[in-house]
Length: 357
Image (tube, rainbow, N blue to C red; front, side, top):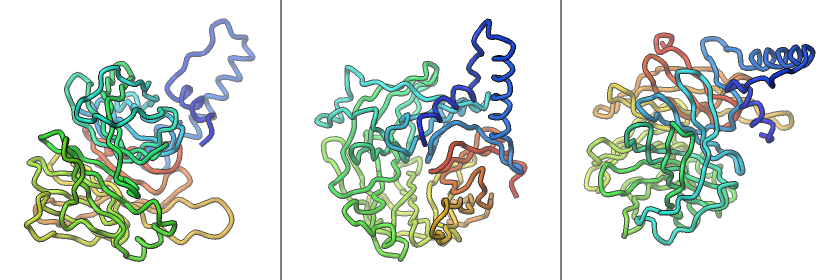
């Protein structure tokens, strides 16, 4: 998306009119505001927050007062804050911390203007402060770590970990203790046909386990066709990971030693997110072959609920791809509202939980 999207964002979040404007200018501004509201009008039971750039993933901050979202386009804004009460959004002001986290020594600071953030994880510290882990493709393949202060609309970069050579990162999940995390390799950056290969069922990815002072190791049993979304159980013993190319969700022991369990779904599963009741939301796309020529069409998408103990799956939402919103990648629940994001487009969506089947 072009930089004009940032101007649109200012309008969406309620930038005030200039004082003492002429009646004609006020009328033109009012008409422009009305046109933008119309462009962001609901579609069916989906409502939107508009003026964003490719929010591929998001997670609650401060108990759901905000959602922190990624921006999957190089040179965009890096991170967003979405106000779940006001239904508005704004970019996060990013800076480099003077004092960095000692666990990430030797990793150079990024060019913040080149960030292209993808999968996220959030570790809350209370009062709107949280550590944000962000998979990044802008300028390098890495996991970038930020200290977010939601009340100030600001985040400081405090460290990073560079991905192993050739690893195209996708999703990240912090471990509950020890300062480590797991991160998925979707495919190899050196394979120009990597996406086609994984969609044909070829093994292209893995889940990496990173720990301070030891670096990366592979999580046993996670070499899959396009390792995508990933979460870790509350006790840190189990990893849940999506195999995008084979339409499967896997449960794997972090330390190995247990047979992986999997379940098939009817779509290409993208991101996994914990639901308030301890189940998991899994969201992905029904990708159709692209027509030659003309703009790409949004794909239909779905969110299912996964029982982490039984691996039973039930459908929660199934939506057609529309001009307003398609290709959903992640879902979270805040109160009685379900929120959805997508790797493409200028908005995030939300709907009442009660409107889901």
